[in-house]
Length: 448
Image 1 (cartoon, rainbow, N blue to C red):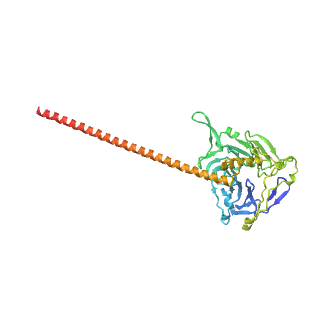
Image 2 (cartoon, rainbow, N blue to C red; image 1 turned 45 degrees about the vertical axis):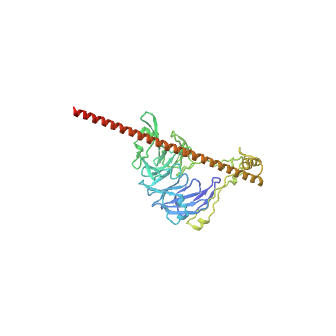
Image 3 (spheres, rainbow, N blue to C red; image 1 turned 30 degrees about the horizontal axis):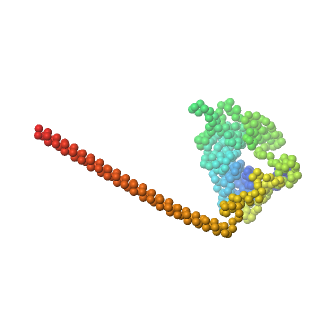
């Protein structure tokens, strides 16, 4: 494996690997490198030290694609055995698990033919989504947090490569016949109130299959880019406004994503096969008149710090893993002193400190002495005594109020009981009088 630096055209390092790699990936921070072989074996190295942290049999057949998530916490591997495995980087680096066979976080096994490409969505692992393409004419959308399949997109041709925009509004799928399909993950619809609304496409699970060739011809032509040559790799610009398509003839076509118009064709590698494309912000040291410190002049061009890359180990070594050292490039400090708007002289800071801190102890700006401290203690003790007296008085008042309220409540309850008893006695007396009058009337009727 050959290693190059942006600052030089010459070969910087040549690394002898344990075996021939069929795929390779570097994490976004540039700390780790993963490689897959045609036998399904995977290797995991630290770039700065060259230490091999892990080597294991991950698949039954050739590893076709390797991808890190955007936060570098997980590694995804696709293989010709139609499977996609998700590996946790922290488990691959764990010292306690070095003697155990790595187990994947999850396995995505719904494809039926070799996996051709894997694209990771934005977000932290595992709350991100993943697109996988296969030779079985399908592209599948997965949710890693639930380890489930969300949607299957069925295409008329086998898909060779994918590109997903940064906002996850759409993805582009290319095939070997030179066609690039644009698939929108959102669509417009009219709700029950005749208002235009936007809804997500798919997400129903395993049974949710969207067939791209079922659309009408006019809509299909609007979402199709015909390159005319076998497309081998795709890449979107950082703003997702431009699409780069690499072909098997060595040409790189640049299209406008919105209009699908061909803007430019790069023929530098004509006659070769474009296997990989990537877009990045141009490093400041590649601009001739600007150095890494962003200062005028190119005096520091030859002394640009280069990230350390050590030869990779060909077998695992526990002693080297424990004793290795890693070099870190510190950020460049500006040579000119910049004053912040909140910066203040040392004397002013000390004066403010004395005013706000010491004055709370002494009542002034003078440093406290032993006599003043003792007098302050006596004052505080007298104040505590006064507060205790006031507290005792407050408790006494509270007790008197409580007894008065309780006494009133008892008297009111007794009065209510007396009134109730009197009303019951009156009612009984009225009832007796009524009964006597009724009996007298009956006797008079009997005599008559």
